Length: 143
Image (cartoon, rainbow, N blue to C red):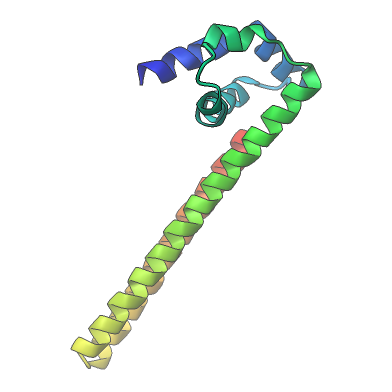
């Protein structure tokens, strides 16, 4: 955790990265730096373990390269969030179907089946709303 905090603080202190990001995202570039820091920490630093943070940021890339890196990293974050949300929806639907089938087999009363089906629909709707909210928040952060 301390490493992550130090990494993010170093990223914000890096003038070259901040300027390159600001060229392509002049409006409130701080949110891009936050996304950039976490994705770099996961994807880039993992493959360059022999390099210290200072050595990494003394290498100044051209602005076009920085823009491509930022765009790719933002797309990766969006894809990961959407994929995680889709997995949650699938798991909730599967669990709901299993619960409905078990209840139908255990209790044959029509009223119980209707209540369980209504509850299942409510659960699915709530999950879909949560997924939509997460996607909207990610899109707002990216845009």
